Image (cartoon, rainbow, N blue to C red; front, side, top):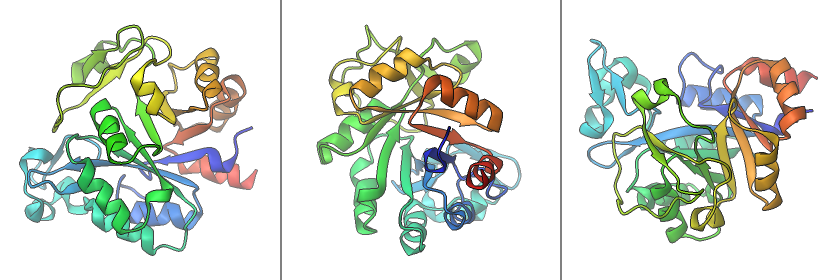
Length: 270
């Protein structure tokens, strides 16, 4: 049986029409959600924004890469940019809200800006509520350098990605479960991740407290192997209550990402 506290609001989806907005955040916090996840991309001038994809469309339908834009002109572009908050604005909204018990899963999509993002979290006194998430090992190694023993989560594929995934992602392959520290320090405007065939091993595993994998790829023994080392396992993403309950009995994950507010209604009313 899935506990309400184990459900993660994925980009605040279902709480408002648009994901990753302050309105969505406030609606999720007001509902009493115990865990929220949101994404950070970084502009050309180094300003962290709350958005998932590496690009977005303006009011005329023109696509812009976020890493090519200056932050002061973002909202004026309209379209997807009209409700794209800065990380600082979102952190302020979190700090100001009465819901002080919600865990914050911050998924960093661009590498090389960890100190600035960490400083913002510290400025709003949110550090004790944060799980740092990334598909980029560069980000997690850098955050561990800033402060060891933080909560760090690697998102990755645990089964070989198919053609459609490879068409839009740069897929890296772990060697015998190992992801060494990459040489590159800065990664911007990229959609990438790692395939790990089986459990992660080595230096990166030793600094992790969490892993996150696609729901359709994970299997019970993989979950148990991580949990034996006190590494929590979550999967994304669930929208159906029956599937959620069935998967929880089989997999016994620690947490479950959800894109559907109905699941929160279901669990809180059950």
